[in-house]
Image (cartoon, rainbow, N blue to C red; front, side, top):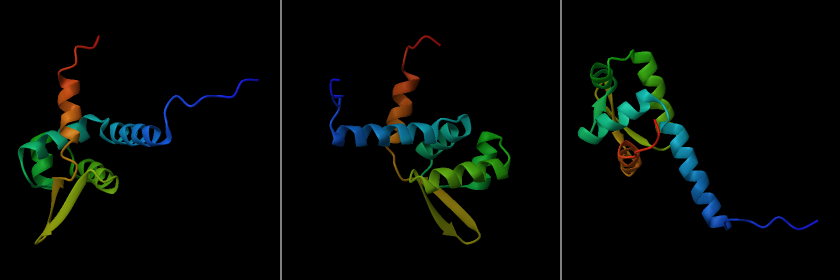
Length: 105
């Protein structure tokens, strides 16, 4: 039986894993909306994000926490508010690329 050959080296495989991880993390309309808002505003509170997206605070907070834990967002306390910002601004480039894609949709 022939040995399986690796199609990519270990470094490339790790890079592909990271890309897949990011895509899985942002693959939700609310999360994409959050990224879009944070591209336009340096920092926003949960309340401001909810107002812009017309979403429930509990749902929005859940998505923000998920994205923060996965390293895409930063959070800073400002008095009683938590202000979120994009930690990985390059994620915006992925979304922009997909917006311009002429896939069969």
